[in-house]
Length: 105
Image (cartoon, rainbow, N blue to C red; front, side, top):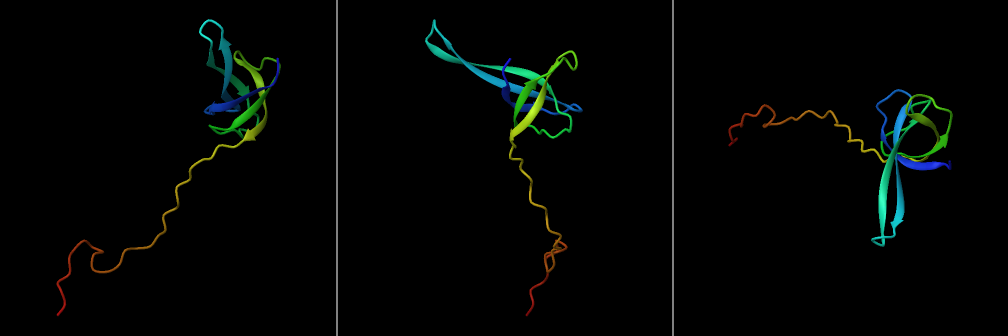
C-alpha cells in the first residue's frame, strides 16, 4: 500500500494518534466527485503530533488490533491559538475599590 497523508483528529492516547484521510473518487452514475473519509490509527513514538497536524503515514507490522501505521513525518504543524498572557497591572485611582469619590472643590 502506498504512503498515506492525512490530518490528525485525536491524540488522546499515549504514543498513538488517529488520522483522517480524505479520498476523492468519481461516481459514474451521477457523474459527480464524492469525498470519503477513512480514519486510521497510527503509532507516534515521541507524542509529537497535535490535533490538526498534517502527517505522512507508513505501513508497518500490526502493532495492536487496529494500529497498522507509523507516523513517518509531520508535514505541516497546526496553528494553535495561544491567548496573550495577562499583565499584572493593578488598577489604581478613585475607582479601584468600586466606591465613587466625592468631587473635589
